[in-house]
Image (tube, rainbow, N blue to C red; front, top):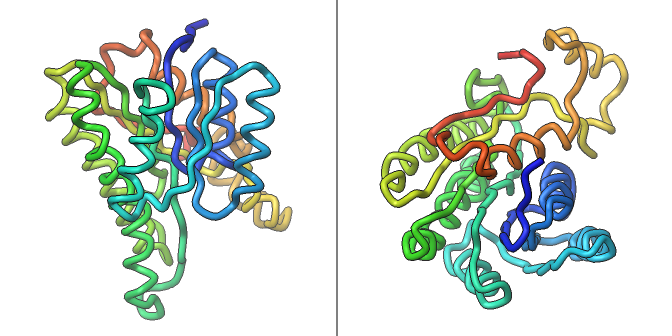
Length: 247
């Protein structure tokens, strides 16, 4: 099993769901963890308490990563606390689903701003730090629908497909400086959102999945840990699908 002792990971949207599972995984493997949140300070503090109780060093920072200066402040606070950042995981994301005919311009812009621009903001604000250190791993959380498209999610799909393009481009830009950039594309994962779905809807989803089950947040976290580890040191510019065989 690989170790992240003396490494620092920054996880955007790390207070709950997939982000929380990622924080827990890296903490278990010895990393210092920076938990970013936007609104839910209670959830962020609860996650931080759980990690600290297990012996991890944790920093909690509020920041709206869709705003460039707030993402810059997030990076600066993390470096000030731990001296360096080794791994960036861009997990923050929102949905505002609707068919194109009913979707407002505001709903399109907000999803693009958080999901795609926010990912760009974080990568941009960490670039000089990673280049100075001549090392770093960036993992962008995209989605299965970024590969396939999905009716009623033109804004979300566009943002997630954009993240895939951004990932491949930055892998080419940064590779010569020993900075790896990859993406993880989850499929249907059990989270607070899926818990609200009826059993009939869940069964419908399962029929689309060859493994006939929804994924768990730890499945995504495991993929992130592998990509950030030395065992994946020759992997960059890739999209790892965690979707039970859907795509």
